[in-house]
Amino acid sequence: MLATNSSMHRLVLSLLVLPPLFFTAYLITGFPYPPSPPVIHTSLSSLPSSCSSWSVYPEDYYDGGAYVTLPHGRTRYWLIGPENGQKVVLIHGLSIPAIVWKDVAPVLASHGYRVLLYDLYGRGYSDAPQTTYDVSLHTIQLALLMQNIRWDDAYVVGLSMGGGIATAFTVQFPHLVNGKAALVASAGIIESTDISRTAKFMSSPLVQSASSLPPFQHYMRSLANSSSSSELESVNPIQEIVRVQSAHLPYYNAAVASSLRDGPIRGLTRAFAALANSNNQVLLIHGTVDKTVPYKYASKIQALVPQAKLVTIEDGGHDVTVTHAKEVNDALLQFLSASHKSDIKSQVTLS
View 1 (cartoon, rainbow, N blue to C red):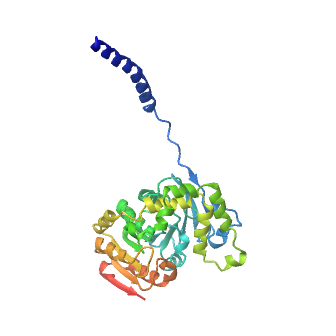
View 2 (view 1 turned 90 degrees about the horizontal axis):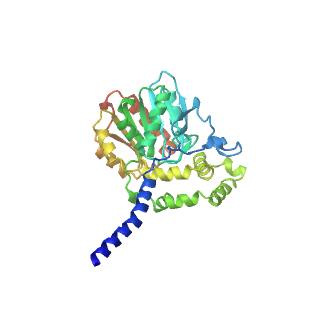
View 3 (view 1 turned 180 degrees about the horizontal axis):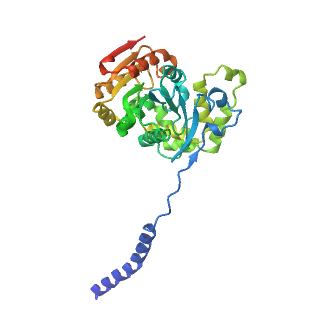
């Protein structure tokens, strides 16, 4: 009798529990909705003409400017220098768009190079897709841009995070790199201990969610708009562009934060090792007092890429393309014009 009651109890329990479970499983495994297109946020081109960005970094800052629409939004690029010149791509870093090459690109062009500059996604005049800013996003952006302008290959030069992008690009798309890669104050293998607590805190998803709220955005824009005209006349244009982007572009801070967490700032040890196994000539340029990417990383990269030649800039910080433009230009011109690896000294110190 007890056994019969127990069996009946299990049967009733099964009838009560199993139907809801099957129904829940049916709902969960239902056919998914069609994928949504990525959300694309605006660039500096959307800001009113009264914004200071139009005076310090206008859309036509370099000659030969144009837009190309790629799967993740519009990319702004410029082509300067003679059309028949040897092709060179300049890749900027984490937070400052192509204005950071203002003292380098014109010099390369004046020496006969055909120079491609562009703004990375989420910076300057390029759109900001709401996505993860990982290595592939950045390398594919450049590959598609080169395809659009019909460049079969080029020398690549990367600054800071752009050095990490240049390294990954050279490894992922070897047929698009014409045998030379120059890495200036290059990131790519930064250890977490060398990223400041403030940067880690500000790049956390929680802080980014809070900073995207309207009250915070309104406060940041109020600060950015509080400068008087006399103050703007004496402002550092590069610092001003960073400030404007942070205050006015809705996804700039998130793009920078994602690049710090997920992008080519760190984790590229294998890419550098693969670069060492390629036939590319590699140049490293690094300042001795760089606090953003400490000078020790030049040696670490050279250990991974033994054929890399190192040019050391004494007392150079992270912004050597601005503060030590002559030294950077001299090193780049000597490297790009050299026809053989033996033409480039393995260690050079400039002061």
